[in-house]
Structure formats: C-alpha cells, structure tokens
Length: 459
Image (cartoon, rainbow, N blue to C red; front, side, top):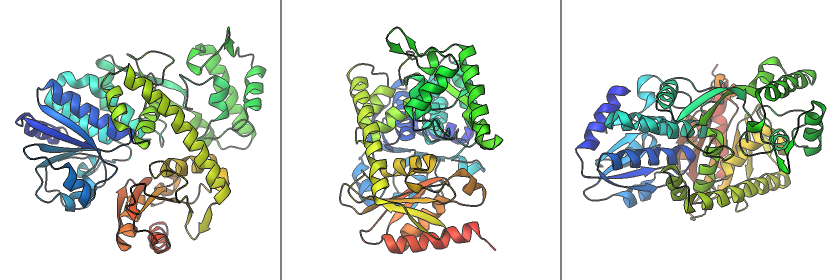
C-alpha cells in the first residue's frame, strides 16, 4: 500500500494540472479535501468535481484536456468505463476487473476496504507520499473512515486506519479514548443523546424523551448548567462512568446479550484542534455534517469546511445539517406509512419520489438500526427511490454485519443484480448502491434474492 501510494504521488508530482473527481458522501468529501490540500501545498494546479456515481455520462463530463484525473473514493468499480483515460485512483471499493491504471486500494493487498481503510484513508496515504508534512490531514482521513462506519463492527478502527490514527496523534490533530459511542457527544443534550440512541437501542429509553430524563435524574446527573443543557462532553469522568455502567446494567436487565450490550462502549475520535461543543470536534458528528452537505447536493460546502472555512461555508453547512435531520425523520415517517415488504432472504421498500435518492440509503440503514416500521435486522434491506435527474431508479442496500459474517456481500449482489436489468452498481459488503431502469424493480429483486440465497446457503 505504501509503495503504491509513493508511486501514485510521484505521478502527481510530475503534473502541472490535476482534476480530483470524488464522491458526495462524507468519505468522498474528505478524500477530495485531502487531495486538494495536498496538491495546493505541492504547488500543483487543481480543482475538485463531485459525482454521485461513475457512469459513461459522468466519465465523459469530467474529462479535462491536459489535466490528470485523480479519482478518490470511486473509480475501482468502474474500471471498464475508464478505458484509456489519463487517470489515477485512490479508492477502497471492490475493483470490478483487472487494474489498468495506477491505483491505491486495500483490496489489491488482501485488506478490507469496508473495515481497514476508507477512500479518504487511501487518498491520505498518497498525500503523505507527496510530503510527510501532510500528516495533519490524517484527521480528515479518520472523519472519512468513521463516516463510512468503519468503526462499527469492532467498535474501533482497525487495520491501516490505526496507522492513520497514530499519524494524527503525532501531528497533534487527533486523539481517541474509550467512551460511550452514541451519536451527539458534543452537541446533543445528554437526554437527547439517549433518546435517539441506536446500535444498540436502549429498551425503555430509546424513543422516549421522558424516560431518558427520568433515567438520568435517577442517577443524580445534573442536566443543566444555568439555562443550558449539558452535553455528554460536558460531564466529568465520574458522571460518564456512572451513566455507562448503569446503562450496561439496564440493557442486561432487559435481556440484551452481553456482546450487544457492550457495544455501547468503544473508541471515540476527537479532532483536538476544533472547538468543543461543535460537530467538528467529534469525528462521527463531523462526518454527519459532511453527509448532510453531500446528500443535499452541496458537497462543495462540505469541502470548504474540510479545507478550513469556519465562516460562511460552516454556517451554511450547519443549516443544511438541520434540514438533513428533518428530511431523515420525514423519510422514516414515510416508510412507516408505506410499510416494508418481506420476501425470501430480503426486505424492501419503494419510496418513489418521497425520499431523495441521496438519502434513501441512510433511511434504510436507520430503519435497520432502530427496528422502526417493522424492519428486520436479520434480513438485508433494499430501498428504491426515483433518481432526481430522471436517469432511473436509485437502489440502496444495507445489512447487519452479522449477515456479512455469514457470507453476505452486498457489493456483489448490487453489481450482478443491477447488470442483469441493464443498470450498474457496487459498493461494500455491508452497504452498496446502484442505478436501474424505471420499472425493473421486480426483476432486480428476483435476481437479488437469487444471489443472496446462494451467498447465505452455499450448499
């Protein structure tokens, strides 16, 4: 991996102009920011362009005479479309064929692109190859990895991500510790953090503000400082230990298994140079801010925040974050009304125009995590939404990691099932997406069921 990164850095160093082409999610935005900052520092003219996915049209649109194309957080799944493009790739998705262009990808070395290195991480290795002083960009690589849920399975980052973490700590931009893993440690009042807790949900508390308040009051936790609600980050170590231990006891008393209950604790990642009480201080909250930009077609706002803008771009991104949360709540409400359909080996819903195509996968993942709308965590979730540009139907797939451990690979499912109906797709074993022609949902589901059946019942 390091040798591949040095070779790719050498190619970049010899070019006068580079166009960075990257994805719109948190990992892609972080990758684009790392690439652009590293190129700026090297004195290489560059620009960043965002795409939802690579298809023949988008590949044609990003071409730039005289510029080397640097694909970050995408490209490996579209090798057949790149042909003889003047390009390089820093990615972590499963390659779709033989590698014909200079590439940094963990899959090429027997590593997991879903767990051990993200697209931003692969891009960071190249940036470090350009100049070791780019180690401060490790913070963005970790935001990208957390945004891609690479810490979810083991409740900590593993693989080459550990090397990136060490770089960040040495550069003074990152730190980590064992703590409660729930979302909102910096910005949510403690009771709100527990009210919206998932992975695992807290029986009798998740979904109920009143129950969350009562639980904390029973422990004697002071919930306010003056008129201001206290966040988890504002509690002292003793208070945090008390709440965590009582939460474990609570989960076990409800029959939650030890292995699941222990998932409330794990590594949390802090960007030490950011202001406390803001979403930029916590890697998980930072990644959500970036996702809100990308999912609402404002990825460039997220890019500017990653590049250091704490003025207008940051304020506009914070507004988008509020809109993002509201859209997700409305999306979950819609699926509750539509209902989730169950079939052999999978479950699915079709949101039509009711959920943005960039958000439908997030909604699917939230439903699996919370169990709302009758979502079954023991089945993969397939979600459909009409593409806003009229190009067809967006397909998003999500699954619990326990299914991946049994052999499920959603990347392979989406790649084959979309191709069978004239579309395209790919991604990771635990989360994948694609685009299919309008009206082909039923045929796609039949093909997906066949592949999932073969993966989970190989004999």
